[in-house]
Length: 166
Image (cartoon, rainbow, N blue to C red; front, top):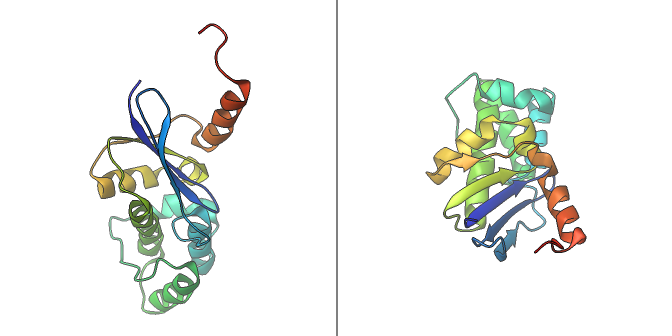
């Protein structure tokens, strides 16, 4: 085994879990009640841009420009996005900015070290996010197949108990 940091970004929360080379949890941090850094934030930005959340990744991939959002807060970001649209900022640049904002918010959660594995529904539906997080962290980010099911699989394995062959 190898020590890894798991970054799980879901609709309502994000979690950073560090496990040692034996697969035992050594650290866990979850965002608090704030929706920043979650799928809800991405959804809110899509709503403000007048697009379906499923279109965010494709739209964000059409640009390398990411305007800086000054607010991580979902409530304040609503107002900021509307103001930026009125200023003429392209929707694609704002979509990319939403992913950049989520990545920076995750980075603030906990010091992320070593090999990084990205899981959760946000990455399952927004592949661009892994490239952005990789750049922000300055390290390679792995995405397993079906990243949205990793938490459920882990819970099932944990409930099953230790391997009787061991």
